[in-house]
Image 1 (cartoon, chains in turn blue, yellow):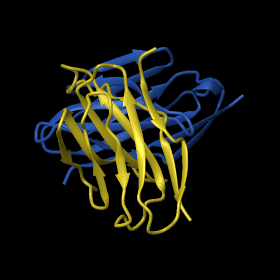
Image 2 (cartoon, rainbow over the protein chains, first blue to last red):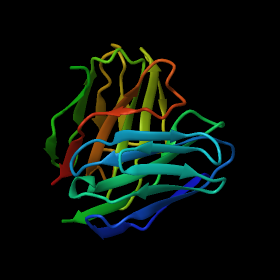
Image 3 (cartoon, each protein chain N blue to C red):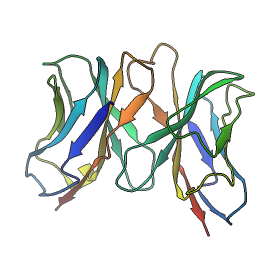
Image 4 (cartoon, rainbow over the protein chains, first blue to last red):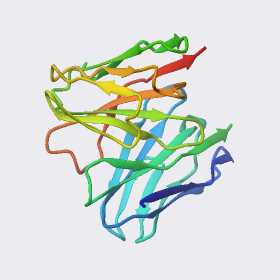
Length: 110
Length: 115
């Protein structure tokens, strides 16, 4: 069965303290891996798509990378406004829907 | 502005009652989805629809029903058969040709609480 595991469940950082969030996956035939940001009480907002190992995408202070077993979301010099839950999801060649991880709740203190 | 509108934002239901959550989009997207989100769990797919008058069950369809009579609308009914309906419900859509990009557009969600 396809599985997506995110770690840590929660992460507290000081403003400017860089770190990484992990998304490990066990799927048959990865078509794509996706990162979303979700603010409390809101719907997720799409951030990145990664298709193949070695691929990287960047947006402001965020950089997503992909290997054959996991993806990392690197946050460089975070600011309090980066506080949110970050979700990853995978899509396989077997079906068109996406399987989501439980998310990492990031808090950045000023 | 284009987007997805979910209503109501908060809903309280007594046990044994059916409730319907509304989802309307003006993005001209063909595919629409309903997800359920519980604390500590990932989003789980309830139903999805790729075209009008057609929809498929997701992983947790039991106790739910949907309709897709118009492209813009995809309402979800939570029936009394759903054993544990208290959750945050999210509606999403994706544009034509974007199915494999992961670029789902989500509404702001509806929080259902069973009293």
